[in-house]
Image (cartoon, rainbow, N blue to C red):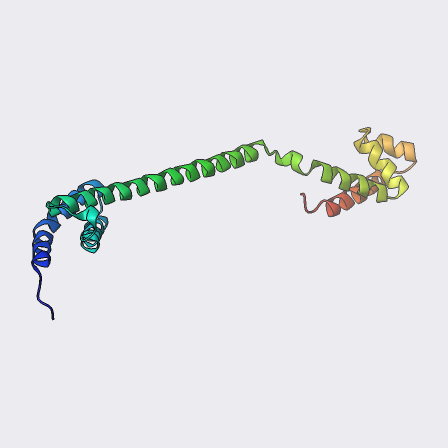
Length: 180
């Protein structure tokens, strides 16, 4: 084991006597004890690893370490600020997407959504009906004639008209089951 040098002894003294004050200083700006302790410890390490370089030659070691701590606090705060700005941009982007979705949903009219599909199914179903049933259906629903008039036009009973109408409505219900 090598004996402790005067330089190491001086550093240990500064470390023990100043560490808590430096941590409190860093904490007052960073607001997070773990970050404050990390900044102070990293600053001491930075000083010790670079103490022999020309740029670190200083008679006021405590003041020099304080400067490192201050600069590291600035770096941490700048990183936080940049992160918050990125989060703010992300939030604005997400809010914009949500507003677009809300607007899209408000403009969506469910009654119009499947109108063309339903019309196509109705037309296709009517085309498949037997001729007489189709003609009776048209007179009832397109021309809105009463059952009695339709029965007279086709020479059948009112019950016969009801049968043809019932047959066409059942076919429509069957083919439109997914929309009803």
